[in-house]
Length: 257
Image 1 (cartoon, rainbow, N blue to C red):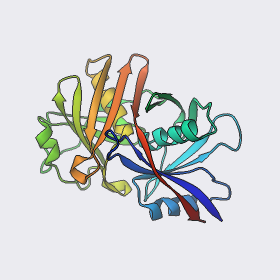
Image 2: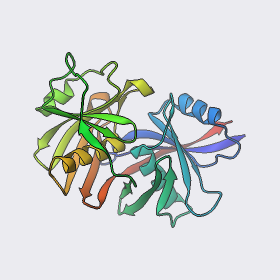
Image 3: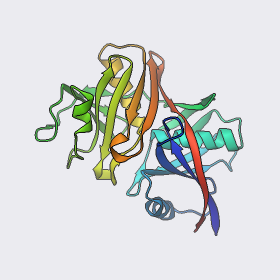
């Protein structure tokens, strides 16, 4: 049967770039295998399947081309945009694998706030032969992300996708405490490089809070090296972390399932 899939670009830079996303809003009759197959066929870094038939809080499942994820930022921002801009409206939460994620729209920006307090520790991973970090941490998102600080934005731009290091977020200050240059690699889950990564922005905020910046608000540039210039905004305080950005709709596809 045909069903709609909204094709969006999330975390756009003005009207350009962003991270492509598929949002499927009719999940009736879809098995786990069918969802995984759709995500693989679309080929985006993630596809999200949203179910609001039960009333109350919409539920969502997120798939990369290779596996299901309990949490990811750009799919939830994109799903929030669909729910708030297209319908049914009146939504302030989306339930996913980590619990209920708060969602809100402020002008042209959609914000999400995950429910968990991210665990931060020093990374035990060796980055020899790939990068020369100033420092590195492991953050549970709940998948373990390696958050690697480099000296300059040019160092970040010059990286190649790493093999065997898991999910790696490399970043450097463009402007101290205000702007960051970042790249995210997740070869192990079928995403060689992600154009814009909301969950990694949350991980970065957790690291900055952990290392003494108790509150803050930074702008992250990502995706330029792969032709998808993207902008993410992240803010944090003692009360938690939220990440936001703008969304553009490219098309509505009919999937035959």
